[in-house]
Length: 386
Image 1 (tube, rainbow, N blue to C red):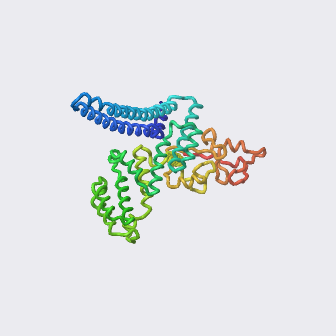
Image 2: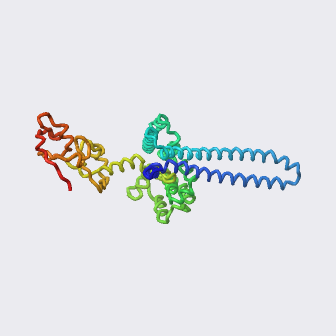
Image 3: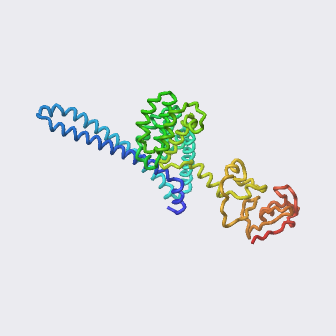
């Protein structure tokens, strides 16, 4: 693998393998808990059978034990199937990356890069809730093995439930990922319980709100004493309060805030970047070619940043850092150097000598493509750059 390809893979393809690996890791830990629990129950059941006073009673208990053992076998096989699926997905993606890093055929490389472009666009569509468009593009591009549509679609279902004021699916998700959320110091679960507490106050179920707070808020790990006091004070206010501090807590906008917080937590758990890869790549490219000329009166028609809408998109980005400058002929696009000397017309515009010579009419007249002014070629002066 060349150093440039290696850097490219690290920069652009980190999540390609990381996301299925994180899901595989999650499935493994869930399976481990299930197996440990089932084995413990089976061991206890065996112990209880052995303690029965007679062989006849032990034989009578065996069908129930056999049924439990069969159930355990099915759950164990199901866990292995899920883990194997994500392990295969990791292998497929590694093989996909290897196609690029070990292949030097230009046609094969072009096909691979087309798949990567499709993958970047699908990621952008999924992040912006264009699910049908994304799924159609996945199918038409044949990139089912290298995109994470399941992650976004399952997240969409939870986001939709939150938008419908239903916290149950999101709380279940928090329960499944509690240990990992704790490591990231996420406050999502606490905020969900806080919203349930607020909704009980909104429905005037004050006793229910107090009992809910005692059960879920008082002992919450993400709760500080000050935050608990601020939340409990809501019992003394009505949802129609004009007090700005508590009016914000009663606001319906909090549901959208929960949607955004869940999305951020979901991305963080699976090591997805906050911004889409399309946005990152686009900004990097614009910044690399952005110069001060792009925002002057001397804009170039061939420069992407000089033209809208990229000119506006690049406004907040830094200018490119150029340690070496090159003069490019505006007519031919060729470098101006000792083999193609820069020539300045009387109106101050500079072009390559080769392009002016090719443009020259039979009478020795050249036309400035910018101003349409006509000059004799011998009026052009050679420019020397130190």
